[in-house]
Length: 95
Image (cartoon, rainbow, N blue to C red; front, side, top):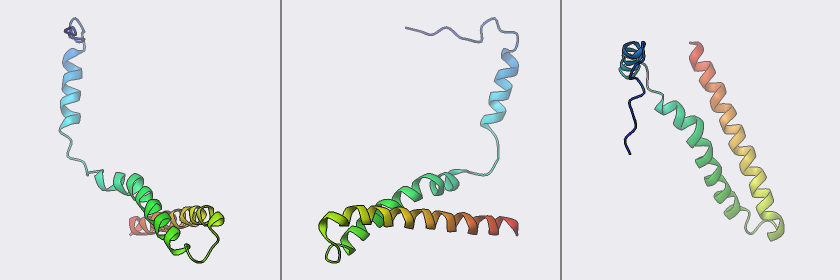
């Protein structure tokens, strides 16, 4: 089934095409690094720290307390790391 062109009969069709062309050709800075740091880094940091803390607590804490303790420590570590990274980023932007 073919969709009809939504711009047919529109008085602003040329203007929309021009705006879309300009938006597609912008030379602004890439946001890939920012997106990866904001979304992927916390997830990876949490998963890795949870695994490492679970392994490290294996012989030190009773089995029933190991997972909740590792979870809380991993959350604290991830939160602290991301807050520190945010503070460093803000200090760096001021210069």
